[in-house]
Length: 382
Image (tube, rainbow, N blue to C red; front, top):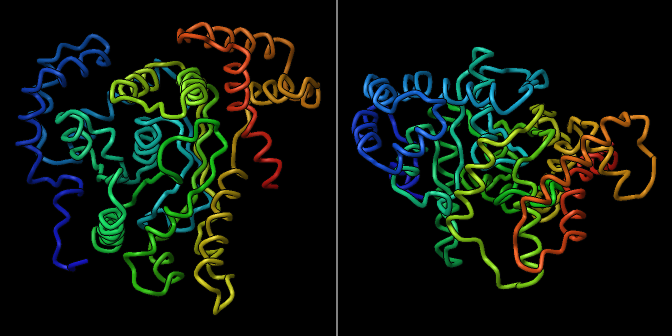
């Protein structure tokens, strides 16, 4: 990768681009409709005026994004909490690698909670498959997102990965800016949250031939996100049946928009973010002379275990385990009221699915699996 590259095709926008990007957004009818839908009744003209008052990315986040997301927290969650006590130097730039539950909110809620603890927001890795309208591309890049290119041929993908890794290393080292990235491409439909080795390999590319040293420079921190309820659980189950019945099935752009909309506006109960042991602690324990395949495997499995270890388990997760097993193994972790509420919730989600040849038994099992996996994974990680 050319050291002089400016990463223009993937980088987040800077302060010099705020005014022109805001003007483009305000003039976009699709953006107007989307913002009005989640603004809580605030006239778009009022929002546009505040947007036009912003001269910097930080002002845009504080004046536009922070109020919108905090309003969503009040309307759509019972609690959002962030525990970063495992990080020794909280002011340093980190890469937070986390499991992935919601397309939009995983990173947005993290940034809000970091701000509330007096820390800076994160830059966000986002797949270009989600940037289906010009206003989405403009909005996310103005909101400190950088672009991960998807669906390329092998040679193009390698070049894109090298560029992406170089940008990430530049962002941590030169910009002193923390980053959020998911542990895998896309959300884990079954909530089993396994780290993809390709993510770790990509991160190592931009820091030289010494894998351990390259990753150490990024100060990677595993981050576990635990949603009590996933408003998109029935959409994920629906997609599983559609793929089961037709292996060639592929989501359309409108499906991602639907997932974004429901993920943002749906009720989520409690949400907890917990950081784990920084990866550098583990890297320091790796023996010298370890081969690359063994090293990537060790790091990937460690990241997965650390994310699993820090799940926050809710009563609904224990209920789901007992429902799948047909047992009362975890009955001491929930009340009968908890069980009845979850069973009613589960049926309500199933009732939202309206596909042909609806296989309710299969769909129910899919949703129960999503709520069961955090319990099983946490037990195995310990």
